[in-house]
Structures are given as C-alpha cells and as structure tokens.
Length: 234
Image (cartoon, rainbow, N blue to C red; front, side, top):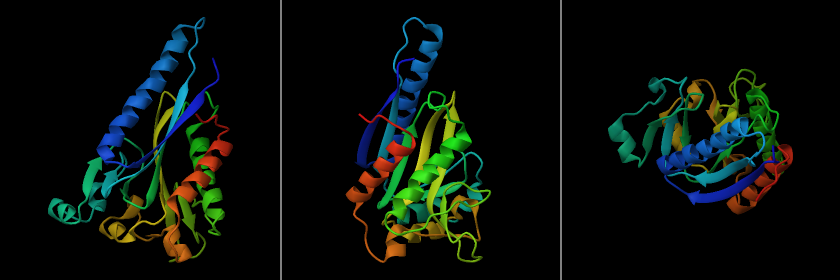
C-alpha cells in the first residue's frame, strides 16, 4: 500500500451535527479506499487520513454505552441555555462540548498505523498529557476510565480535563477527544460527566487562573499528535 498521509483542518466554531455528517463522509472515504485496496492489489490507492479540530456551540452528546438519566435537565431547560442534545455512535457515556473547548476528530486507518484501539486511545491521551504539560499542568490516566485526569490518587479531588470517546469500524477511527481549555464549566453541572457522579471536571483556564491562547495551544497539540502518531500532515 502507498504510504498514508493526513489532511488537517481547523473548522473553527461549527454546529455539532454538521461536523458529525462531515466525519461520516470522511470516514466512508477512508473505508472505501481500504476496501478498494483489498480487491486491487495491483493498483493500490493511498489512504488519506483526516484530523479535524473544532469548537462546537453548546451541545451534549450521549454515547452508545450511556444512559439518558445522566442528562439531568429536560428539553425546555436545554433550550433555555442554548444547548442541544444528540445520541451518537461513539463509545462512552454523556459529555458536553462548547466554546473554549478543543474537540479533535482523528479519522485514522489504525490498521495501516499498526495500532489496536486501546493503544490508539493511549496515544491520544499521551498527546493531551504532553500538551497540557507544556503549560505546567500534570495530566494523568485513571484506571478503568479513558481521558486525561488530574489528582487521580486524591479522593474527592480527582477531576477530568479531557474526555475521550471513539468509534472504530474496519479499524478506522472517528469521534475523538474534547480538551477543556477556556470552557464554561457550569454546563457540566447539568450532566453526570461520562457517567461519573463522584468526580469533577476542570479546564486549563481554571487550573492556571488565566485564559489560554487557543491558537497557541492548537499548534502545540497538533505538533504532539503529529509526533506521537508519526503523521505526515498536509
């Protein structure tokens, strides 16, 4: 197979459903190339992976393994806080996306990268840990849960700074991570984040006591993802 490369797009602030539809189309494109290559060994096409960064207007999303009881508000209240709600096809429970949060959607051929899903998630976590580490924030993994956390060994203090929820089919990934940078954390009060009732959420702004430059951190995060996954970005 010809060596894959990755197309990166920063979409800015975009509606959740619009970007979900884009993900589905890009995902189908990667899968279609894989299926073509299995049938045409003499004429292999190059896999084009995709990486999207985006901020969403206020939205709650519920994964396949989640329960709607973890959304603590009704439809009328959702409208009053200018938020929407979607049941989606990633793993995990409920989470919130909104302005000031970097949401990343890697659509990667994990098979071509020689990665199992567990290793892929581990490397996503590592990219986040390294990125926030450049700002003096110590990110950690929590046994039995995905994402990046803080103070995992201190009961009552454990809090999540980045959620991860992915889908993989035919060893192609979609959905991804949500890093709280300058996020309005009050929106998390209306859910049990990721199904947890005994753990909090935080943001880089809250931990640092200062607003973080979004363009700067996006650059650092892209560099770390590129290096950890050995990507050729175009």
